[in-house]
Image (cartoon, rainbow, N blue to C red; front, side, top):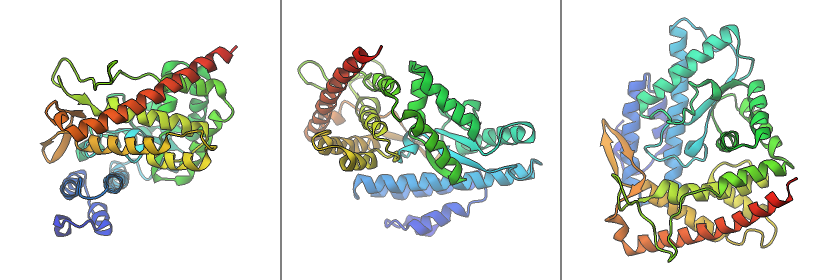
Length: 363
């Protein structure tokens, strides 16, 4: 572990330190060591590179946890996996934008129908793996988007039926699940299963104007962040009074807008910055004239999000995702924030007009 004390990032040595762990407790210790190096590099290297390193660490931790979980299942008498499967992630992990304190957002795709021994194995596997990830330092998802939950642990055939069902209902909750699903990224196991899953997802969006309108309806809903004078709105009450919610006030609105456009074009990338790059190549001239500004706003959002105040607890980090009132007094920071929020307001107004037009055209 001595190599991890150095300021320079050696990706091969970092991976090796994680891969050789033999227990969840060892993985937790090695995650803590990696985080300390990453924190030394924060604001020293470009935020895109820093996010890549953080998420590469998360991926390797997850892959190693899957391997250890398989070994524990064998020791517990379940034997080897009865068929191929894929461990997948959603949310910020799916977009390769997880912070050092992000929680769990994951699922399983199983090659064959979940019945009999396969049902018993993967139910126990999903519960054990989610618990192991919690030991490593990934809090369980409040929304229960985890491989321990039947809704997010299905055979490929069941997943295809579920995706189609969500796409047909067009109501707020099923569309929200479909939006979550659209950020899916493969991490461990069978890459072929994940590829087939993504094909089914995008097939549901192809030439489906009603579904895209429903996604747009979800996309344009977000809390106000600027007042009528264009001033940044901060929290009025509670523990974060005077602060600004970087995650839901700045970061998530940008993610939602870029995701909506990406689904329109059938873009397979899940990273927000990669999606923007694809949009630049696929869009017609003038179609998305604000893409350079959006990219800059996304970089601002990522930089602000990873710099929100955090606390250490047993070697792990936690953050409220709020900038404190005192931090917002920095004139340059406040100017960048206000410029990004003004852009989001313009984009949302344009999308709201599109939504009204689309709803008028529907029978």
